[in-house]
Length: 463
Image 1 (cartoon, rainbow, N blue to C red):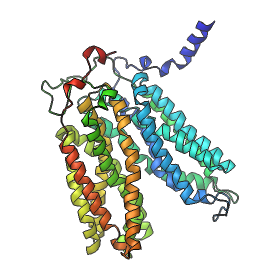
Image 2 (image 1 turned 90 degrees about the vertical axis):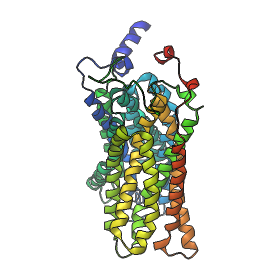
Image 3 (image 1 turned 90 degrees about the horizontal axis):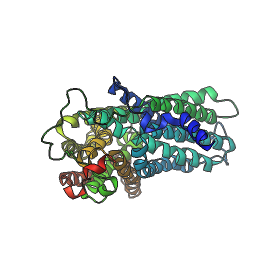
Image 4 (image 1 turned 180 degrees about the vertical axis):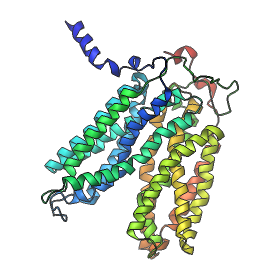
């Protein structure tokens, strides 16, 4: 009886097993990027979560905040908790993902991310903020991390000839998810709003179900290539480039190499320089150009930055396939230093156009850094454990999510408290950002191949 029950259970869920995701002859590898996009376009919603903040301060008061309504300072923790658990879940589930394959990981991510919305809806209904922290912050954050890394190794394996382009296509979706989620969320709240409530709970329910559906679609579509598969006509380089290995490094062994920590610093510094600006772009543009940039124009500026963040992920990752990952990051840091140093000058001369152009390029490189790092890891550590290594490296994102906003917000406030006009309060911060990028340039400069003592034995690679 037990054997029959196990067989039935296996029959129901067998499609989640890695062995049942191996592509059949004739399967097109170009179906895998859309599968990854199904996940990344959904979890990219996290960048649009701020559209719920103000409505959630009026859940009781409806038109204005009541004494028992939640405060913005309390609601700000929802996003922070989600980003922290993104990094933690990516770090701790990477090895499991490598073992079970992308389908089971995407399936789990869908349940976590969509389920987080449903639990948060209950929290809104009961007016229990801890349930929202638990739902969107903890459970949803785990879905974010697992969904973010789930297609990476699969894409790199399907596209050995263009790994940067492949991961760039998927991670572009994460940057662009907010462009769909933001207007959709506002529209849904308007449809569900009544004189007695603001429509947040119903919107959470709809989004949770929609995201579960589309992420499940990605899980159904995704496939892994058969062992030994290669694109037609593809021949691996006989002489790999200096920083491109044909060997493999175990995830635990990767943590013992200086290369891992150099790349951790490279990603952290690149993200720190961009994420602080992204969070304060609207206020910064209005304060640096008082009377020239209105609130509506600032909102348009934020939208433009999101567009460049998204497009930069594909452009720079694809470019890295031709010029190399190390050289791509050299451009990020060198050009970024120049642009950050120029920003205060654009405010002094009152050039809005130059200010916008500087930040458009900066945000394209911010997004490009996210999209290029998986291929960089593949080049340095091989493909066998690249998903798990990528997951652990994303703790750099969690750290940068704290460093960046703190640098921008607290240094700005310190300047203002000491009598510096608001229009000039960001100058010191921009020069500090340029300095951080100089450190990142140095870390990237010291990148070199992993010593052969860290390489896996050939017989262990396929184990």
